[in-house]
Image 1 (cartoon, rainbow over the protein chains, first blue to last red):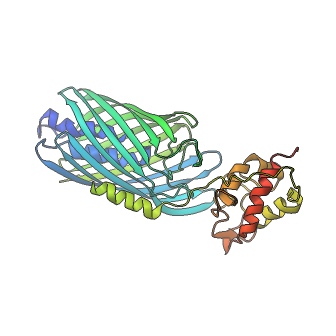
Image 2 (image 1 turned 90 degrees about the horizontal axis):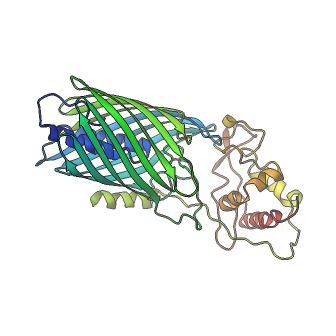
Image 3 (image 1 turned 180 degrees about the vertical axis):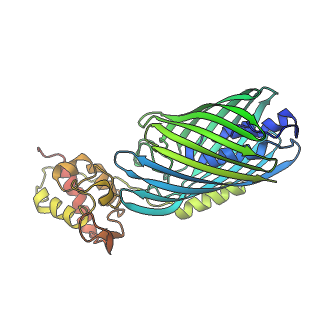
Length: 275
Length: 138
């Protein structure tokens, strides 16, 4: 995660970092879907040459337990992802398939689809910044607690600062349901169960990573959403370990839901192949 | 652009109907023909309380959220708008999101039978009863 584990001597610092910054972009989106997106972006960028297009495919597997009060249960998900990167620009797409157990009822189904695009605005040896736009399409069933039930738009900005072997990063964004917030469509608060968001919220994340060397990196982060209007403040903390080669990146993350009941605990394993 | 087009196409194919307020208004004066005893309780017992009952634990509710309990009038009046928007019918909407397709034969049991479904007239009466009942002194 966060470009903390590049193979030594293969590419320039700027080239290696290009996707590390892109990795930040995903952390602004909802935590689960974005995780695949985010690690996928990272996998793409580490060895990217600025003048060439790079494609990547990835998959993320997650398992979580939740207790929101009205609902107690667990879910498992698998999220394929597809990414593209060229120069300062990149794009990605993910969609999840879930098995959800909620209050004694088991359900299988698609989650929402996440499409994202990002651009690096500033890239130096130490600092990178950029902007991104994620759009979430309601392919998941709202009634089965697998989807938001409406399109979400999530513009964001990100930045990172690196002093090897340490990198710190932060993101800030805004998410809004593209539907009436107070009209006929009800305000459901934070939903769905598999990746809750508020109808309108400010998103944030902050983290730091350490490059262990030999392709290994560890990092920790916190991320969340602050509701605008009615809703629930959401805070998640995560610890991540990753291993990367020139073409493959693999990682695992353990997350805790600290506020807002996104889940009590969640584990995610992801891998991506770039070519 | 292709991703966007494909995404919207998928969304159009998979998104389901949303719960809608029926905008039912209780006549003035309240006719008083629909009450908890004459309509509400038997309606809930027939269609809802196999999953939506305060006596059921999380694992016995077949997906029904906690605090959505319709075995008492008090429970119904906690979330009348929710009931109206999922099962009621009126000028603005006819909601058939509940009951679902499969139901337990006994409260808290497995989903072993097709759910009975209210008629349109019963859904209209549900929204009318809720609109009036919420205005009555309790």
